[in-house]
Image 1 (tube, helix red, strand yellow):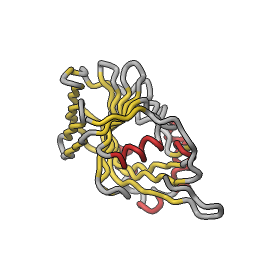
Image 2 (cartoon, helix red, strand yellow):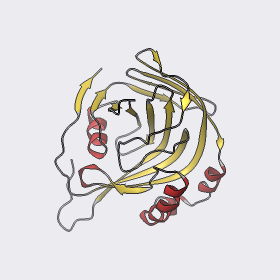
Image 3 (cartoon, one colour):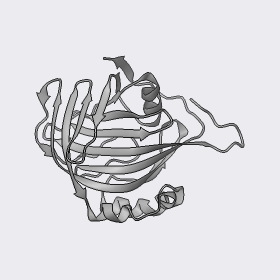
Image 4 (cartoon, helix red, strand yellow):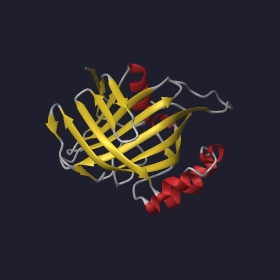
Length: 222
């Protein structure tokens, strides 16, 4: 991992894409990241919190797994193909044991407002700080900035918001049940996704600072 030299400006990495968050009747909560633009090239990953609270990362490569696991907290890391096919009316996800399809609705009123904010302003740390308090009040568990793992800082710029209207998910062939809220909030980082199942257009910035040693989650490949 990169460490900032004394007096050097911390390095900032920007990830431009979408985050889908949804819950299931089985108590499994899913957070899908789809990143067409990133410092590591296009990729997708899935964060899973099981009903028993165990947190699992499904990542497509060692490089992605190492970066994400150093930024967030997981009990298990599984390296496996992660394929996401976005669509206007339906998204499909295939990642290791997970198969998921979901349908996003049109942009919400908040989503339409977010699209009006100029990108340069929306992606600035100051704007994230300004939006943090109203985000927490409107959507409990949601944060727009905070401290991530390994001494990193992170902030989110939401650019659009769509409600997920229907979904179907299986894990190792077992149906996870009906679409439900993301509740309790997921515990991968300093904040959760909205409680209501949603698809958010987002630009995420991770600032690398002093890297700290941390306990590694168990890692395996499929």
